[in-house]
Image 1: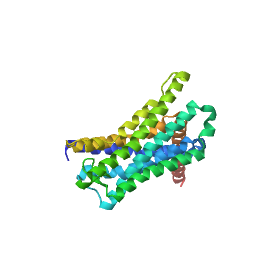
Image 2: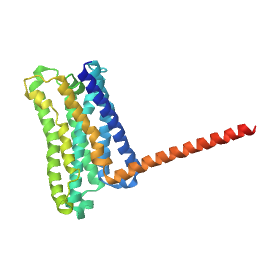
Image 3: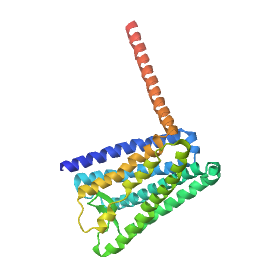
Image 4: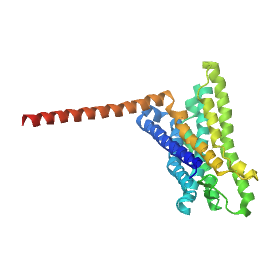
Length: 299
């Protein structure tokens, strides 16, 4: 392995560990706090966390193995399943971000009618659409054998091996990115610009809303550049772009959950509870050991 490959492998390992810990913590907050579970945005955050966790345990390890071994890890069936999941999960997380931005827009711009406009039933319908939208593209790609190991990204992802299908694959990729990434970006920009107008008027400060819009940009896939350019792209740049896409899996828990006051209070309560229980158990063990020593001395 070259020094570049060692660095990239290390970056993937760090991203994988941080993403796993952060998203598990969000899931624990959701299960621990009844107030979070009662909120409608909690459904969107739960769906986003679910996508991020699956991406962390399925796609990231195979990318790491692809960097280390420089070939497809596992058999074709495993790679096809992981490539299918990656396409589904990436699209689902994009649409979840768009759903969260719509929820924020309604809550800030129409606060008096929020509870009538955004109910659990409405959130369930939105999530049903995101799942249907997200699963349609990987189904088409899998049926046309456009899923496999791409050496440029060292990952199992959308990939066309047949030159005769290039035109169809370019059209499919363009439609996929337009209806998933570009659509989500437009929704985010529209809703958060509206939110920022109200937020500036009321509190004259910019929250993490701008960051939430910018974080989508790391998921704009370089495959469009790859397909439109005759110049070959170095695999190191391809893997770096993949790491940037994975960085969204790491940043999502902090942007949407862990840095917010309600989640901060919840995860701090969880940590304090764990530390307190650990301290009690330690004290009990120390006391038991001390009593045992006294009994041995009396004997």
